[in-house]
Amino acid sequence: MKEKENHSLYEIFKSKDERFDGRFFIGVSSTGIYCRPICKAKLPKEENCTYYTTPAEAEADGFRPCLICRPELAPGNSKIDSSKSLASKATKLLEENIADDGNIEKIADILQVSSRHLRRVFKEAYNVTPIEYLQTSRLLLAKKLLTDTNISILDVAMASGFGSLRRFNDVFKKQYNLTPSHFRKEINENSANRNKDITIKVGYHLRYKYNDILNFLKSRAIYGVEKGKYYRTIRIRKNNEYITGYIIVSNDEKKSEINLTISDTLLKVLPQVIGKVKNLFDLNSEPYSIYETLKDVNKKIPNSFLIGTRIPGSIDDFEICVRAVIGQLISVKSACTMLQRITENIGNKINTNIAGLDYIFPTPEDILNMKEDIFSAFRNTRSYKSKIKCY
Image (cartoon, rainbow, N blue to C red; front, side, top):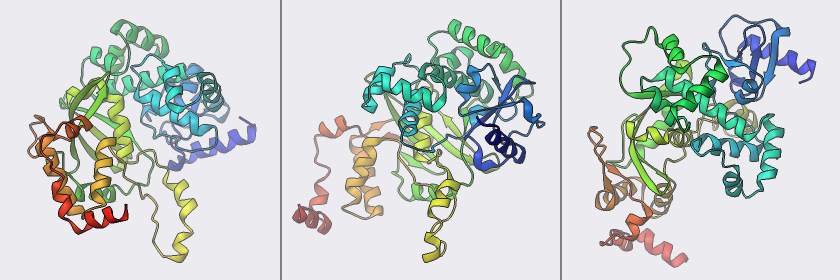
């Protein structure tokens, strides 16, 4: 980076401006660690700072993650331009499929580009190869699990995409000069009373109108699948197998983090679960960038756009398609009742030990194989008939 740009980044680091969290990282040569721009540790000298776009780039230069600001909790950088759009999509696929051993050809096929083009664009965008990025993603997820949970180190290794405990130990020690067990001891020495739930933290950019998105989800909740603040069952497909469980989401506004609790059955697909929760709660959104683009609408209609507004996504692609079709025919309240009826008739039962959380939403196969025509109620509605006339 140019000297003038470096000075500007140092000023941002000095001011702890939350708007730039996740946009860049700072390697500190005097300590050998790298930090987020909001790190509360003692400010290093400007000449000791080097700036990076991603944690992978910092780690490729030999820096270790800071134990105070925890770079693994930094919110995603969703800034888009022509080439970075492709690289950004690739990073999400890598992060959600860290157990797949660097199958760049598969990711390139999904993105409909050649693997050679993907590698070139990725390197230009992030100054590391996809494989280097993948390894850093694995290590940072492992660090998060070691810090936030009490699950066994073997389970940490498997959930983080390492093929064996031995490989995990070797890579972790080589990268951070610490064994996972020593690292956990250092972090958890005052945490003997942690609960046994598998709960991790997922960072986001402030501001965040969390209650608005929660109220939206609650008003459209399918009884038996979703409830409260915020519980729901979830199904992930992996290697032609459905893995099921439940999640619990809560907000820690002071730390700008989502607390994500998962059932132990979902540990083997944890990266995919994190990706789906980020999508559902729009955690990669950059509120200040969006506000700067849309704030002029407030001149025409005062307070029509408020900073921190998010767009809710989905957990299950098929479920959101069914919701969209039914929602076009009847009211929100009626749609929730119909979706509940569908789930109770052809969905799969699940034991969560949480009252009111008893079903997994049906799969496409479940609906194709159903014996009873549970959609017949639509045919008597005025909305349904008007839609048919339009077609």
